[in-house]
Every structure is written in C-alpha cells, then in structure tokens.
Length: 148
Length: 135
Image (cartoon, rainbow over all chains, first blue to last red; front, side, top):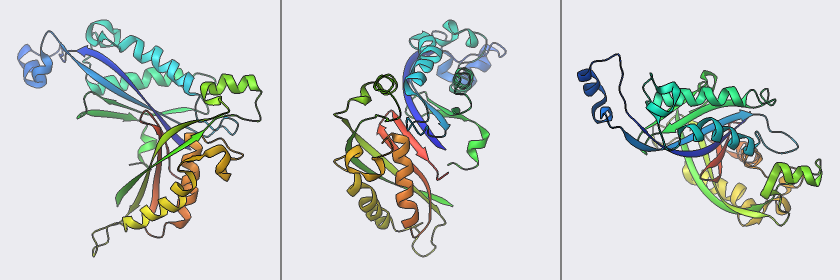
C-alpha cells in the first residue's frame, strides 16, 4: 500500500460569520476574519490517495485523472471565488479551513471512488493550508493507527 | 516513541514505458513521461526511523549511520543515473515515485541496525510525493 500525494493551489475570499451568533459574538470569536467585506488567502491543497501499485503502470493512480477530478470538483468552483457567496455549500456554513477540508474530502471521495477504479484507489487524506502557518488535515480514521 | 527523519537529495533521469502496453497506450497513459530519451528530476527522499530515546545519548539512533546508509544504498545507486537503464531494480519495473519509495524501503529496512524504519517519502517534485510504510 503506497500513499501518493499531489499538491494544488487556489486563491479565494471568505468571511467567517455564523448567522446563529450575535454580531458581538461573531466579532469576539472570529476577530478580524469577521470583517463584513471579507478577505482572501492563497490556499494550498494536498490530496493523498492510497492503493496497491498497478504492476503494468507502476502507479497507484492515474495522475491526469486525479488532476481532472480536483480541477472540476475543487479548483473550478473555488479558485478566485468568494466562498461564502459563490459556493452553494457555504452559503449557510462558515467557510473555515476545517469545513473546507471536510467539504473537499467528500467532493473528491465521491468522484474518485466512483471512477471504476474505486476498489483500487481510495482517498486517504486531504490537507488544506490557509496560510503557511495554519493547516488542517482531514483523513480516514484507519490511517491514524499506523501513521504519524 | 520518537520519529526521526533524515532528508537526502538525488538527481536522476527516467521515462515510463510498459512492454505490456501498446505504443499508443503507453503514450496515452504516460503522456510526456513516455519520451524514450528520458527526462529528469531532483528527487528528495525522507527516511523516518521510529524508536525510544536512548537515555544516555538522548538520541533514537546515530544519525550518521542513517546518513551513511542512505549514501551507500540510495545515493550511490541512483544519483546522476538513468534509472531505467542503470538501476537493476528498474530494468523490469517502472521507476515511478511509488516504486522508488518501495525499493528504497527494501534496500534500507534490512540494514538498519537500530530503531525501526517507519516511513519512506520520495518527492519527485515539491508537488508530488509517495509514502510507503513497508506494507
């Protein structure tokens, strides 16, 4: 079993604001990220897939297929967009790095594991860095037992 | 348990072509990596060893030994080589990032005297890497 990781980049704007909280609570919890005009980040996304190595190709996963799926599911809908306003799933959900990671994991899992090679290739992990200092990892629990 | 990682770099060339596929399939699957004249990368390999900290030395293991082992088993075999033609392990197996990670594990694991080999990570570029844990 080999884990293959590919890195992608997208730039997007967002505002951290929860409609269920008061204005004051939002300001206290999210600080400058609650600025009503929003702000942006250069996100770096690492997508890790796992599976056995195909003996003919020597590969776990066809990278052009992976690139096409990530482009369609993540980069096209997210890059140079306002995440709160342009992305339907965040219209009523706070686009924190945590929520973005889970959303991206589910978007990719559905496509990747429904590609006919779904039995061989599995999505193992998504890591999303909002800045160089902050990143979030979302992964299958079964990975955690044997990995750092 | 502490995990100690040592990083090393090597530069090598390779190309992807499977004799089990037709020329057209090879071109379709491998794209520009199928160029028979080869192309190259600056690879980075990270070797992670796990073990308890020795109370006397404060170390999991002597990193000089890991450095020497990586030099002998990995860099001398791979650095500034054409992997398909000059590394016997890749005469019948494609030198993909995945296969390189598995081979490096197989070279190092039996020779590591202290600690337990935990992870081999091979970067083909900063944006593409493979991890192998021995199974």
